[in-house]
Amino acid sequence: MRTRARSIALTGAVLGALAGQCLANDDTNLITNPGFEEAGLSGLPLGWQGVNVDSGDWVDSSDPDGFVRTGSKSIKIGPASGAGEAFQGLTTNFFLPDGSDLYDPDYEYLGGDVHIIGYYLVPEGEALANDAIVGIKLEFRREPPNFSIYTSVEFAVPQSATAGEWVRFEETFTDEQMLAVGDFPPYATSVSILPFRFWDPASGMDAEGTIYWDDLCLIQGELGGCNEADLAEPFNVLDFSDVLAFLTAFGGEDASADLAAPFGVWDFSDVLSFLSAFGAGCP
Image (cartoon, rainbow, N blue to C red; front, side, top):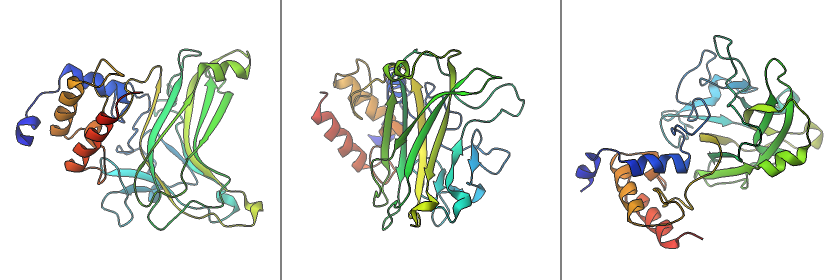
């Protein structure tokens, strides 16, 4: 059955599922190189620039400490070793090689809520401690050559320890929150993405723990699907089309069917996770 499923071509239902779930390789994902797989010119992933993060923090699945969710690459951000590393992270806010534009994703002012999604991991036996904040920052920027920040928002990771397991991260910045900023044209036309950690040297305490990021995703607009099993239209309804979409994705070893650890392996634990989410139903 598994061999046969792998031979099935992707159907329209699966294509719709990918759009709804905002996967790292999805066309609706506005981030360049969201899984950190492609190499850039600086020893870091294409589309990302480091701030106190260097090529040694771009890890491979073959590395001894290479925690990777999908593909073969991820990014790690370790604890600051001194005041000069108080802020550490990656940013999309730099120019393409031809200078024509920034890697920052486009943003339409009041064109729909912005969703930032991804996965993070803290190794077993470690915990993030003594940082002021660890998470992802979004900076909404005006049209070049202005580049000024219209507004920004920081989302902290909800767990300081994950016992070596990947945890889904999802936050939303709404049109209502943008309106609450005030009316200060020119309006934002792009958004910088910064997975980061900030440590206050004045705290007198050393930062602790390492965080890994993988499979980031940013979309503007509606998210389809009420849970991981809601893979096919009509969204917010769990039916046989979702089962077919899961089987097709599972047979093709697509990330949408990789629902349980060990990630990067499609096995019965993924099937159980799908069945559990399917059985839970939509709210």
